[in-house]
Length: 205
Image (cartoon, rainbow, N blue to C red; front, side, top):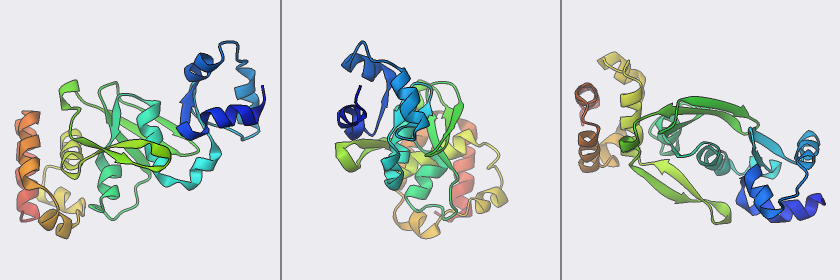
């Protein structure tokens, strides 16, 4: 198997799994993947999932890979809030929400963390176009904030809310409060509603 032929086939996907390779060539020798990974022609994302190192220069693809290597999932929580500029601190993990079990992966593209929710809470994300015609599943600002308050219940005092250091200008002018309230009702969670009221009081929304 010629590596250039393989790369031409799969490069535009951004990342791929071994099942896609076998669908293309059922007799494919998996030792090729092992050899190309050792030579750094490929990057292992998790068991059975790989990407090309050239994508390290395209930061949106690190988020896109989060969608692909553990599905269903969408980027949310701290990563989404940072994407929208709602928090200013650098985010070390790529954080996602999934209906599967909570898990994490570490690879050359980042530290990937997935938090589990019920299937009926897998809503409120948009498809953001990135390079190569791919799309990234990213929580809306409103859903990312609610996911955070729901999954991290220790944000339950005014001081904890302040320590989130949310961008007040964004909250005042860009957060869609109507959509925010609509999403809150879908959680049907009194503790979350209490934390949201505390957030509203703390940031004077």
